[in-house]
Length: 117
Image (cartoon, rainbow, N blue to C red):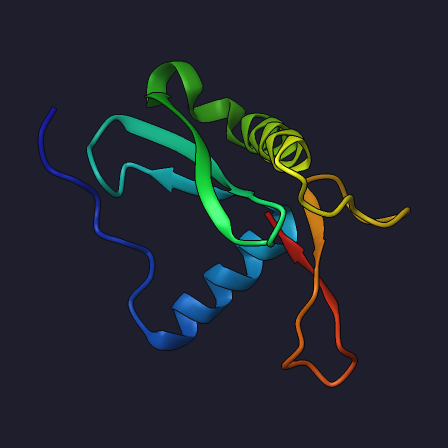
């Protein structure tokens, strides 16, 4: 198949909402936005300096993979978190949702926050 489906992100507010959703769940989803019939999930990999140095991505035909995006996304976030830990990234504090790292946010009033992978 060729072509792609129009993005669901049409406004700045849509973009902000999508980024917030990605941070909450710890992974991003692509549903035919790049190519018809193809879906995927991805999650960032952090190094010991808390920089994104890679991404873990899984994509497949929608007919085989489309119904499993949530499960695959959660697994991708877990794998990315494991890679991050192997690279020395900080371990998530107890009680942090799976697929998230503790990343200092000096620009925030409280000095820190949990940011999704």
